[in-house]
Image 1 (cartoon, rainbow, N blue to C red):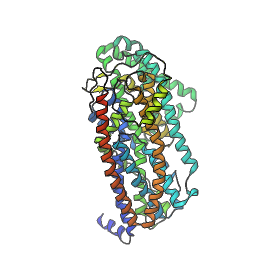
Image 2: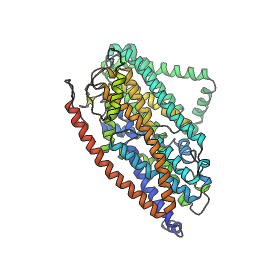
Image 3: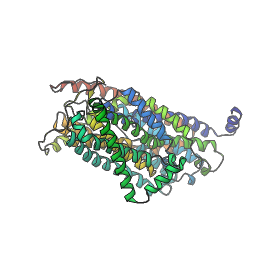
Image 4: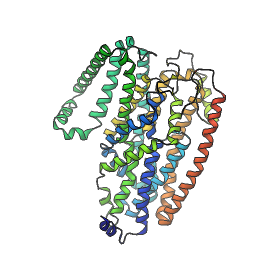
Length: 526
């Protein structure tokens, strides 16, 4: 192995050696950054509802991430050579594009995480690829049709998640109110609600999200093909599955009584977390790993044509390793900030700890003038069994995870990279609107934060495209010197953003305590 590595390095230009080292380092770094921001959205629902503590939730989601990574190949191909045509570039230009994407994405993700702001790995990478490839090859090298399709899929996923989350949550809340753990209520509604959640997760995750599994088992593949031959068969299959799950739930409620009733929605939320992790592994993890792995393949074939490097299949073991790195990022301080800000935005409590600029607060207060008085459907925030403050109940957590996981898995089955962050945030906000959380407490701050987050999504796309274009010109034009300059700038910005983020965190902590409403359980646990 040492001899083969030595022979590979013999005659390799310094640019490729430095790019290879940078690709490995940035691949690790970027995966950790994704864990700090994007991946932490996987566990927001179970943490916000107090079903699980953070450490247990992260481990549980990690199981789904690793499994989902093995089914990520369609998404990898889209992010590797579906946004631009690497075969039309020289191998130096293609490597510069992939390396630049990481230099820009790592600082962008870290900056947003430092301020507790959710940002999309997918959007950052897609727009960074567009900017860097444009710098190397101009307009003609970018697949504008595919790029438009990906962006449209991201936007549509936000609206679909929001609408579905609102409608399903309103229906579920109307049925169970704040009595989701009462046996007498669940004997009436537990079957159809729980059965519907399990059916949606089973269909979209297993049938649509795991094509590789069915190819390994011919009888399952034949059954899946038969079901999808006609819409009527799909409908019959879904309703049969729904009825089966509902029957099992009703049977368990009869046998186990109150014990199972108290655990039904928490268990569904836990299952939904695994499914959400699976969907993330299929989509966003593939996005964050693809540029670095593609750069390494190109560097290993530095003396050949670009198409040779891009045609190499990426082994699932690399994605497995990336999944482990991602879990490390999910246990950091910045990941905790992102989670806390997300669950506070959709909190059912009166007082929240959030930051939003004054112009967003002014817009929110203007919009809230048109709010009509209506009864609040959500229960008051209470202490969860874990000892933490529950920002919403397990019933709402189930809806958040079911809707989010199904939307992401469906997009992955079509090879479309979409955003876990955007889908999760849209679902949390939509279910909160269904529960009328803006009728309570810091409504202006919750709405202002939502406006600020959505505005920052557009800004992140612009920054990613423009910065990648400029950095790619520096990296390719100056060679090894350009790499050193770009990495140095990344580190300087990282230090600056860390200090600013820490200062803001302390400031909003004090502001939240100063304006605390006189309600029970208003403490702020991390």
